[in-house]
Image (tube, rainbow, N blue to C red; front, top):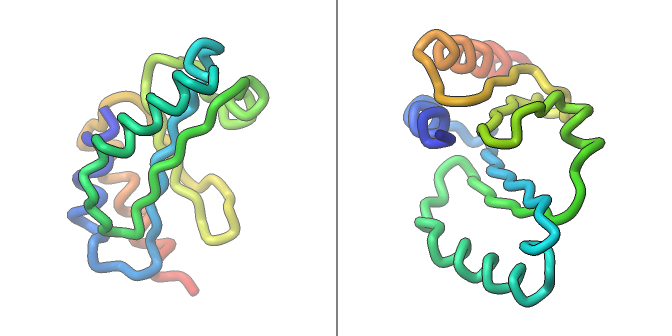
Length: 119
């Protein structure tokens, strides 16, 4: 699901020095938050990352209760992926979710292009 957003994004902005990509996974399950299971999960996740370091890509995992964070960002469906575009001040400038459709991808890429041209 996230690849439907990230691959076109990589293709469009792979040469940009001003773009950073963060993939954040929220893990709310109390079972997965237990120390031994959490350590195994993190070890498995690190091995599965492909080492591709384009766009200053960062993969982050957050364990625990994220109710208020999700509420603030209007993340309603826990079974789908969300994408946020933040400007250099940390403000949400664009939001999408689910599988990327061509119309939404065009909107994201044009928003990125406009904001990268601003100074």
